[in-house]
Image (cartoon, rainbow over all chains, first blue to last red; front, side, top):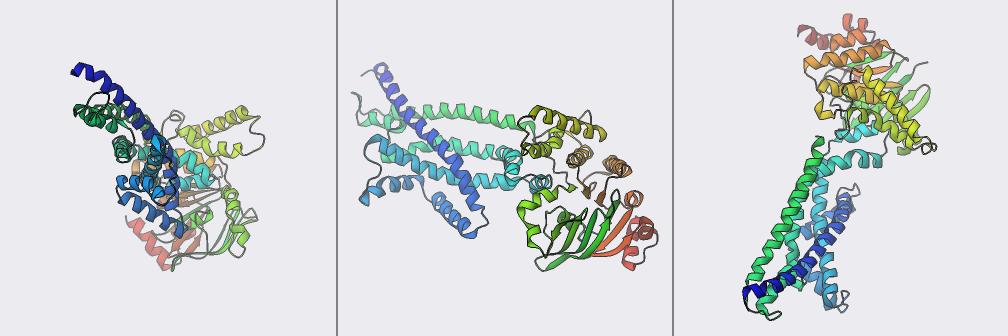
Length: 226
Length: 261
């Protein structure tokens, strides 16, 4: 098959794979951003057992490869006789989402913790002496200052996440790498070609380019105060 | 009747006693200066009055109402403390303005949040907002900042920031306004403009407690001076008594460092 004939077939397959990549990316963000906040509150809790437990969980999750976590989360239930994920692509997606959300929430929680603790104590005290409640202080004063502080490190994590979604290939999630690889083994009459796999990089690169611009704008927007 | 009565207040951090049996009272419209070397407990005392620290012992009364009594646990309840704090205003050494709000918003925020809790806020939203804004503008005007209202803190000089912070504290109309070394973070040129504002508040008979290292200013503005040393009130009296005729050797020693300089 000529290259010009291969191209539309490959692009279509890669597009479809990338859609799955995007889905995993957005589900992870949507889940990990709030879950990370809960975990960060846990690790900052004055109730020692809770803060220790949280710190141990964060240590385990950050201390082991996401790839191993994916494998354990996907295969463990089945090995123990109860495959909660069910078969097929939707089951793999669900398992991958759980692993990614949890893993990224742990990283985010540490970034949040730094962000919250980086807001000077005087801000809270000023709120207190002005008769504000703790929650008013958090939402009206601390939160935005914290967001400003965490945007640069979060941008880093978010860009890493885009590329990390490729790890879901290990449980055969049909994301863009999987789609690219399929043309090596044989897919729609194309076999033994490696360029589609290389070509997947372009997808990541373009998407991360867009994200970099958007996150840069957000950072700029928060420059109105210091 | 005294507007503020402080009786036998004590406070320790770990086993370090920072306040030892502090008692004094303050009349409405008077200005009290707290002087003393760093670490003598002045700031901790102010923080106790504002409920940023909880005293270990003693009683604090405002207008005859017992705000805090170490012997009565009910007075230390978190839910009650919030309301009690409003008797006091506090101006910090490092201003602690909210950076994401303009000068005007800084002054308005707390009042607005308090009004929001009232049942009739929903119906009179616009009216209340307009009133808070008018009052805030007037305060900033009084601080000489009418052309700075829409600036963010980072666009203001230290002196301007501190004046915004004073307006912010005044917006809640506290019974007693406290200053914690209000000019210590300012360079000498900017110190004057802040002291001038405090002086004008004293002339309007605002009840104030000022922790300061500006001895000439304390002498000029106060009706009462307390010299603290190592957590104790070492000497207490009118500015004349403390600055001109100090009785204690320690007071003389402390003051001489300022007159020599």
